[in-house]
Image (tube, rainbow, N blue to C red):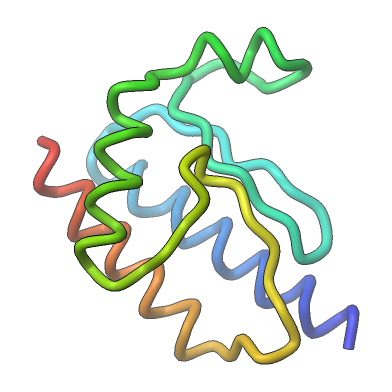
Length: 105
């Protein structure tokens, strides 16, 4: 179960990185196991100051945009996958993320 959750979270984290790379949006996607965090910055995340220095305007726009796409993220764009999540939900999240990010360009 834990291995499956970690693999799904890896898929989500990489999908977000790929979408941002395609649109040249700086991002750090953090997390371990089933956890993930999306931080709009080009600098590595080491502590809370690094998180606070990210693009909070884009974070807010992505939060609202994802909600409009039917994805209900935490307002700080961090989360954890549950055992009910499948590859289909991961793909839906990544596609919604990509759609919202394209609107911000």
